[in-house]
Image (cartoon, rainbow over all chains, first blue to last red; front, side, top):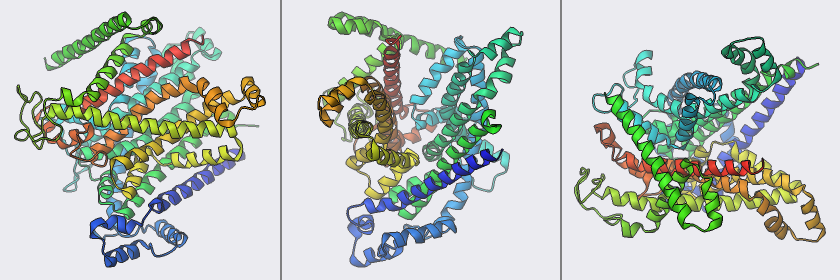
Length: 318
Length: 307
């Protein structure tokens, strides 16, 4: 059992290293600019005084490594500096929005993961039937659709004239849990539709891959029902690839959430990031990018560890 | 009742698309030279429909000024006019002709997506092939760099870079191309790794062929099939990424006609039950689906030949 812990510890260390390099990249990207960010940010309005003020604000007058260390220690203590456009601490802007975005992503995941697993198992069970072909074709189609297209189709259908759901997801007036679920149903459904197709296809492929194995043949010859063969015998062995695909798609949710939040005017991190990019508000963009990147790295790491744990050969190695 | 009519239209549209694909294939087989003819016969209906759509898009993009009834940026009437004879699809939020902007959008959006994909391929495949051929520290350095770049989600990374460099068409193309070239690098390198161990590469090296010749004459021709298929898929991703950025207001800047921003600009109409703003999104989706169909066929053919 001990080697599995050392393996997980190694993965964690590698993940931390990646995170460190990513933070270096996100912070150091400003250095790529030929001139200096303060002048570029102010553009026409650049006077020597304002440029000097911005440079002091961002600490551009200090050497890069000092600035990075200061920034990183700040970030580790939850201090992301101040926003350039409204002078408020970045952490204030982020904290409630992070909760909202997480709520939306978890909501979508809670629908998408069970749904795609179920559809994938059914497609494997009825492979080559009409249901299977139809789900394959719709998966290919849905991968080709831009997220905002899916979102607007849903608005058109379900929120238009006399629609059932609100087309804007606001959290105004401290709503109850049920009310929140109702108001954010359309964004969550959009995200679900975007990721379900891929997850379902991979689940189906992972299970079908195993169906040719001798032990499945054996189970079948014993007279087991097809559903039981798949759920009891094939699924446990297909878990590793399925977990990987789920993590990959949850990571994809992170980027999908940006566009969907803008469509539904949802007060989340993605919306904040888009606004800040337009205003070139560097501290906010850096902070949000770091959070998204960290979530992405952590998801991949979790998938890695879970996939290892789901393999009995690795867990009980002698 | 509403569901049944919806279903009827759905089936009717699919049937019409298949019929168009069949017609296109028949005509294409009749007019093309012999070698192409044989390959076209193997195309399924989905792929021939895809090819037809791609050709139509190319024609529209090239001849946009001739086809469009109004100039790209001219205000021709009041805002949000409904569909009528002069303005077939009505007007947009500033009173510009929707159909004309849709047609010019083909030129801008598709053209820029194509240029970006081409650039991404140029960077990614040259570095990938180089890394696989030279190996050693160069391979290590490039691969680790790509690993780090890929640890940040693509959209987030491009947003970060656009904050730093500002939003213009040139920066957009370069930023997306660099980010996507990491994915091309991965593929080109892994394909080339299988080729460099072949005997004929050894023979070419012994003959004294230089690095450039080795890559372009020996490795590239054998790595072409997967790279071409990847080009199609990559184009879809780049196209969707640029559309998403334009939709967010950070891609192609107004008054340039662009499908992503056209959806955003006219989105208010959707809540009133008008589908006009969705047409640019349909145009995006139709092209990506078509490219995917053709790539699917090509991949199937490439794998089928080996059997």
